[in-house]
Length: 50
Image (cartoon, rainbow, N blue to C red; front, side, top):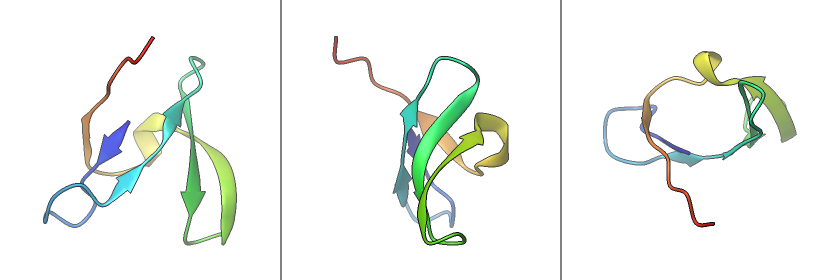
């Protein structure tokens, strides 16, 4: 999943889990976390590489 959090282009990426959450590196927590997709701002698109 690709996110544009600041309005300047893709600034963040994550991996969708299939359970309505995304795994991503959080600058807020300083580690990898699992967050509900709707709480990560600026969703742009997703790609399926399977």
